[in-house]
Length: 224
Ligand code: CA
Image (cartoon, rainbow, N blue to C red; front, side, top):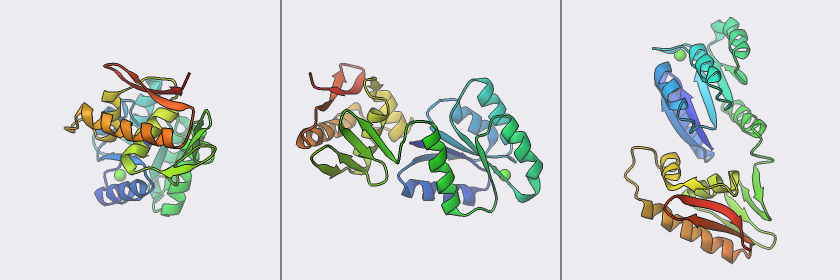
């Protein structure tokens, strides 16, 4: 799951990034509203944490613009204590939830989990397809007979595949989402992780496999 933080208080943004990364989310942050809008507009994020008072474009404006472009990702607004009226505006404009600063990290994590769950992809922090499950909390790949813990990159790639089973996920998209668009990761690196994952699926004795769409990417499917 990839999260965008739009927050001009750099220390808070960094603290949130660190906290969320600890919980295995992929996190980018930007410190002004215009960049926030541009990043969100890529459609790469599953959730946006959006401050209201921001330079260049305020959070309400960012939110309005995204919703008018039909982006449906959950958006959690952050407000300072003296901006209570903004909450009402924010929710009217299509925010899914809001929190008043300062907030506890536990509460933030609970809200993030709830919003991602509401998105319909996660039930009890487990993604399942044809007898194979990915436990998002424990990074465990689980079959009916066995389980195995996945290292971070394998976990992140498999999460993309199992969240969209039987759909081709392009190598570009995998690289962009996991390493970032300005990274120098080669296609071969992705192939290496895919081959590790294939071996693990086989080891677990599942009927699920990662299929190659030649020259495009990969999809999760069942062995016929
Ligand atoms: Ca602010």
